[in-house]
Amino acid sequence: MVKNKLALITGASSGIGASFAKELAAQKHDLFITARRLDRLESLKKEIEQKYNVLVHVFTADLIDPDGVKQLLEELNKQHMKVDVLINNAGFGARVFILEKQPDDWDNIIRVNVNSLVALTMGILPSMVERQSGKILNVSSTGAFQPVPWLTVYAATKSFILSFSEGLAVELKDKNINVQVTCLCPGPTRTEFHSLAEADDIGFPNFAWMESDQVVRAGLNALEKRERVCIPGVYNKLTLYSQRLVPRNIVTHLVGNMHKPKSFLAKKQ
Image: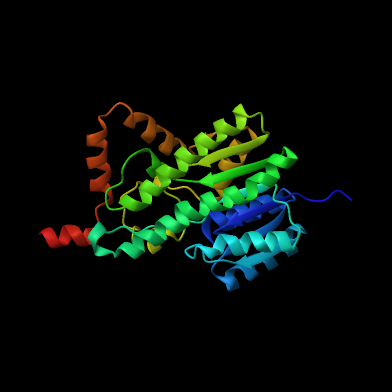
């Protein structure tokens, strides 16, 4: 019997992460899914195992905790699991004036969005290099391509992910290592992210929004084609390409006006 390949997905309990789990299961990957909410992970596990007849391993991890990735990697070793596809999806943000949060709040975002992504990649990559086989998809955002005032720290972490992914992809290629790295940069997507980040009133036109399964299929298609960067959706592509024609400071002000919280506008009136 041919053994299924194993996909590890962080932030798998909802939204894009859950869609990755379902799509990869449909492609006959066994799954190692992780997030903080055990009830949602167990529900997703039950749904996927019944529908797709693959194995799903659930592991709760808080990636804010520096030991979170260490515990995750220890579990993989304990179960003798070799990851074939790594989906670094976990991430969150906050849409507020930067001084309305404490430094620890911003540190937590950086720990999840940046530190855990690098640590998990470094923990999984050696095995992929040894086997000369593997795929890594890092979830960034269209916010990676310019500053996003009011989501300042979040956008900065997404810029890091984009730069890290592109740099790592070239390093591996130059070393003739057969491990693909793709950075997925979605725009507005219908998930819980915007409500959790207090950003569900941002004025994107209705046609700009994508469903999480559309984003996931675009990302996995790009990974299969060995593309380094994937910007899903016509609206997102046109928006980012047109920004190149406008001075960066103007783009930053325009993006800032779009993301400015209504509560801030109300205080100014």
